[in-house]
Length: 334
Ligand SMILES: NC(=O)c1ccc[n+]([C@@H]2O[C@H](COP(=O)([O-])OP(=O)(O)OC[C@H]3O[C@@H](n4cnc5c(N)ncnc54)[C@H](OP(=O)(O)O)[C@@H]3O)[C@@H](O)[C@H]2O)c1
Image (cartoon, rainbow, N blue to C red; front, side, top):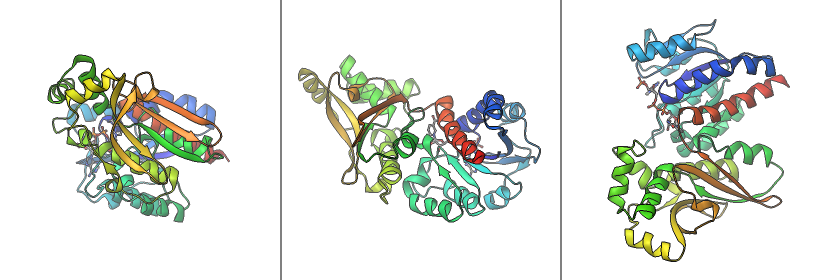
């Protein structure tokens, strides 16, 4: 299966490393090789019908700051048409204003009959229906396990393994940064601002942390789950959202007296779409500390299924992308 990778930052590089590492095993298992025939970053691109060498791409990106030898002039449609491929791996930055450049890249690929695998939340939290329709119309797949919790395989589990079940609701911690901050407030009695500073110093929170702490990231993920699993047509702004800025030391300590913790919980069902701080009893699976993500899927037959794992990171996210690629390889075998 020939791949074009749009975006060569942390995740794009993680994906080529994983393809290099697992290539042999995958070709034995599926009788098909994963071959990178195109790659781009914000200013350059490289293509080769015979396949690009992953080590050369990474070396060039690290030494020259560019993945390709050809300048990328911003005409993504032309660049994505310059080589034939089967699947676009779309790993450009998440943009929650208009979803670009992800939306245009994905639509270009889907409308040319190419599968799309992505970790980019913006397009799916804003234009889910349009993208899904384009995939359906062109008889290809749009797969996005990596958009919600890097190493917490919630989407494929719900849509594939639990396909015979009725999923009643999903609740969970969808943002590791908020969880780290809330946990530090409880464990060390820190005020919010100090716990946030600590998270920023450790590289867990961005210098502009609003995307995480105001619940936008969690709301994007909640909207994606609502669309993918409950077949709704929602954008992230349809999610009722309260972040964690207003969580005080006093509230955390009062909760603690009642043997509870405060956690930023996303709640998704056909009737409810909300992200807000909630009281969770200590010992309950959702009282988890650290930066992990955790999700509980409530179904009619299985009852409660809990999935926990690292929500972000180079290889954790590449793992989710790989799971989507494996699903495509499996389908190709049929
Ligand atoms: N990092 C994580 O742990 C994680 C987890 C889950 C999901 N995600 C999502 O995965 C995506 C990639 O994340 P990342 O951490 O790899 O981001 P990143 O390190 O910032 O990399 C983004 C890449 O996209 C390139 N790019 C920017 N604008 C572009 C354009 N117009 N056309 C083509 N390429 C363009 C950048 O080019 P330059 O290199 O030239 O700047 C860079 O190579 C994001 O949507 C993110 O939200 C990330």
